[in-house]
Length: 626
Image 1: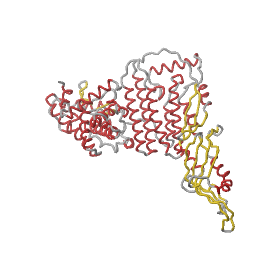
Image 2: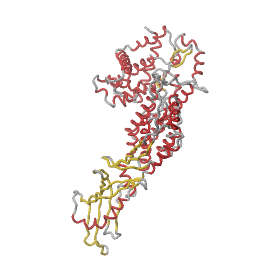
Image 3: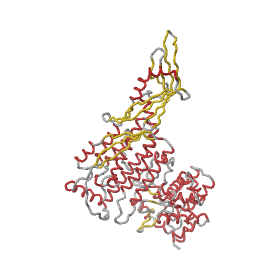
Image 4: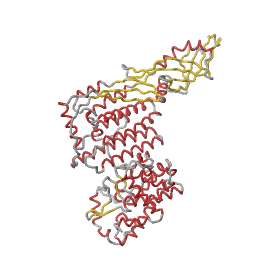
């Protein structure tokens, strides 16, 4: 995603752009590639368009499509329904009508009708209007038994031209998605190559419309002209500090953008099912970022294009589903966002020859498609606890803040090191009071007292989580054992270590900290970073909360306990998600799981079994050896 998501941050990507720039002067252009972007309008969207344009915004109130003003001649329709029949859109409405001769207050020889009106339409593209229009090809009146009444011929002959013209006037305006794409593409492609950019923009157009079982698909196309780039692949050198800084800023902008979009979708949808999908997408993307940041094998492929494609593959179906129940203007905005994302994914698949580079301005413009009225900067990366994000992800109100001193720079590691260095007795003297447990590095002689104190912390945070979210007794037993085993697996029941003679919090190479190894990148916005680093109770509470969330909403909800192995599968599945993200739920029982992950899961299972047998204090072996 280096080239495909944000500004250049690695030496290898820089080399690719330099080679591309040189190729502009010397390489021959290959044939243009056509990019197809599908705009999907489902039946719900089409029905809403008909309601807005024919029924004046109300689907339930009776709409007079024809009325002679005498009371003897009228046709009223309501409750339009939309389906697909072959290559046609089928509209069915309930209705009532009358035609007769008015004589004073009396209607002579009236013909009455009560039943259904069916209208069949063929969609077609209007290039000059950038719209989808509909041609009425057939229409019928039926009675309540769905039979054609013989006596309604005069009525239908009289009103048919007026009614059909009303439905034939319905249009789906595709100009907004085209405009958004036209404005977005210059932020993404052909940096410094105005000629190729203009060629692509000039080729942007509607191509065709097709019916589907669920509605319509309108295809937008544009052309890109890659250049032949000949270069010899070379292994990525070690990143310089400056490149690492650019990489840091890049993934933070991507994470901030995605978080902004997920929160906006959550505001619009208010659906538990969709919220779960949004939660999965955000967490999976953040786990993917962490994996990409981990030390890689020399010469490994750039992981960033895969990150973008994986995230978009998860997010696009959710946005499409979200659009289903939205008002027309919001639904069209969602379709514009999907079209833009699909275009980026297609361009990314072509490769670096397109010169794709999503700048910060490009991300901002993309965010504005989905949230045009939101005045926040979508690329602001904040580590503050975000109550809205916690609610969206199913965690509820923020945890009570950690009990730590207030200082001008409370997150500063150097400040905390100064505090701890001023207390060398913490690592050697008598056990401190319980409230100071987070400052304690036990000696061999103190290990039993230390483990009992940490065990109490873990029991307390488990009880606190259960008081907030009750569970069945059987699931409680699994959960209690799982919290102890996870803390054992992650940190050997430790919050602090001595590093270069200084007491500091445990931190993994990818940013997981403390007793439960809570990853600061994955859980940004859900927990107080200062508490995760310096307060063993806060860290334990966060880990216990995450475990319970994964246990209840993933392992139990997806019935892992019904797999061979029974109820203890819940612990294995929950830990797999805790370790790798929502997509790892079933990895512990899949034969194709990578060996490294198998070993991680096996080690956890050994610890969980030890806890089940009452041997959790054997954790002392990984603290003092033996």
